[in-house]
Amino acid sequence: MNMRDTRINLAAVSLVLVCIGIVMIYSTSAIYALENQGDSAYYLKRHLAYVFIGLLCTFFAMKVDYHYLRKIAKPLLLISVLLLVLLFVPGITRQVGGARRWFRLGAISFQPSELAKFAMVIYAADFLSRKKSIITSFWHGLFPVLMVMGTISLLIIVQPDLGTVMAIVSICFLMFFVAGVKLTHIFSFVLGSLPFLYILVFSVPYRRRRILAFLDPWSDPQGTGFQIIQSLVAVGSGGLTGLGLGHGRQKLLYLPAAYTDFIFSIIGEELGFIGTSGLVLLVIFLLVQATKISLKAKDSFGQLLSFGLISCLMIEAIINMGVAISIFPTKGLPFPFISYGGTSLVFNMIYVGLILNVGRVK
Image (cartoon, rainbow, N blue to C red; front, side, top):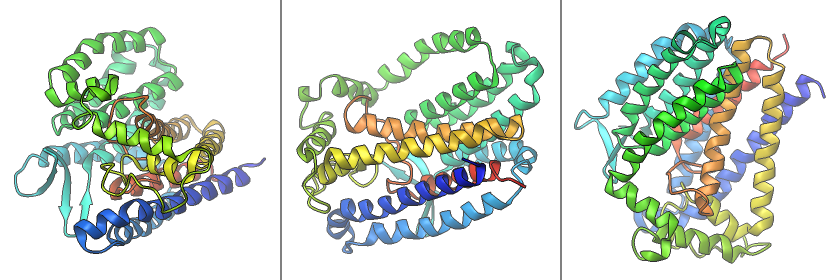
């Protein structure tokens, strides 16, 4: 299979996932939207607007020379840091559940952590490709990236949003591995971070409760364990073929965040094991096609950039599915292309556009 066919396959499977997302967002959000907004298509309309914005951004990402990203890597990081700091300025941010993660721009919400994640991938790809000759040196080849990653992570943790930080750190370490960083350096940093991770989780009451609910949701079935239990009920009640599209019961104000963090659970309920398996196969197909492009990239920057963007998509998909079936504690990460979420959807589509760009044959 030539590169052109690989790019067509990647574009096609991405479009299929977006279309599945449109259908499932209406199915999962209609009752909630009617109850809270007075319009069953409220979230569908907003999602379609983001799909349109995402398509425009995708076409732009496909056409621009991706090497230009190297020139704006540092400015983009600085802008990300500034926006993350501005989140704590009263009156200009949208606060949900005690977390300051969004700017409200009229009818549009923007989540700066998504931009920060994107900027971090570009910066890491640029730095690691430029420092290829000294990548095995901790102080010169790894430490500068760790400092930048730590700064971004700290600003996101205090929002608070530990899930996104875990995703960013995982993406960066996968890029380190591909770039040729010594495994001893990677493992040493991971081991050294474990005490801090323990403190971050167990010193904060709601995170500690979330971990305890993950270990035993039935210890508090009406409180912290409620969401996990309802998610498992949704997935389990779907059986082999599901209850039928639109006939799920857990979305009837039982399962919180049914159209965002737990949309995979509703897919399991309505489309069953066959539906969820089909979705997993589509994600795997996307991974295979994108990886083929990354492996055949013309330069190390393109290879690391595309691999980092693939990691963004795959890690979020794996965590979202894992949370839905209680393999992982609740993290609040959307399913790429499927979950409702404006900023994340637009950036996911940009990622695909840039991966297609890297594989472009001139």
